[in-house]
Length: 234
Image 1 (tube, rainbow, N blue to C red):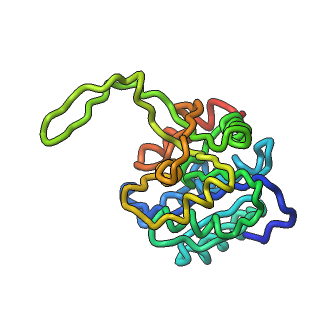
Image 2: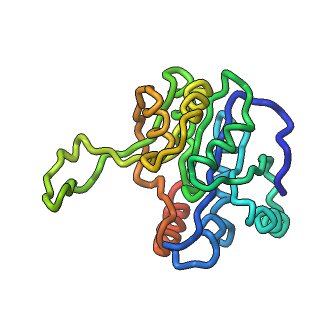
Image 3: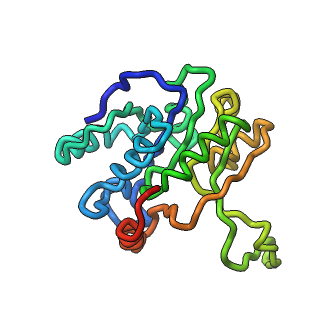
């Protein structure tokens, strides 16, 4: 069951779980679907809890699902410590709600999609280390495919060596993230990096990997189960 965190740490993880399950064709939000017999969200929280930095975990979840989540924790005897916070109207507002629970000015905060359950320890550790030194660290991978951009009905090729696919965690020093989230909401904010960039900060990309899968479609569960069976999360 969720619990208040017992010890203050400068390292934090805001896990954003706002998905409705629409693209999964499921009545259950995708963060609660079973992955090898356990809810997806368990794996996500465990990935951060088991990292070298052992951050305090803040789970931001729509209030309609708080009771459901607590029942899952009881059913599966999931006792990993975390703080449960109500989500907002958009991802921006959900992250802001999680951020409002943090008051340590030298905190280093990772923001992560709840439905990226197999993020490897090395990626999480590198993100915290780089952000602590350089202000922020956004995990990304180079595109494997040819890429074209479509404007006004005309497509044009892009150099795929200059195209990066953005993942999470996206990790920031408290001062950057707090300042960025004083801005009014804009529908141009697609992730935390776009919010922080709009506030005037340079975004640093660090290497991720293509195994850092986001559960979006039904077939992603089978892919994630295969990846879990093949490789330890280190």
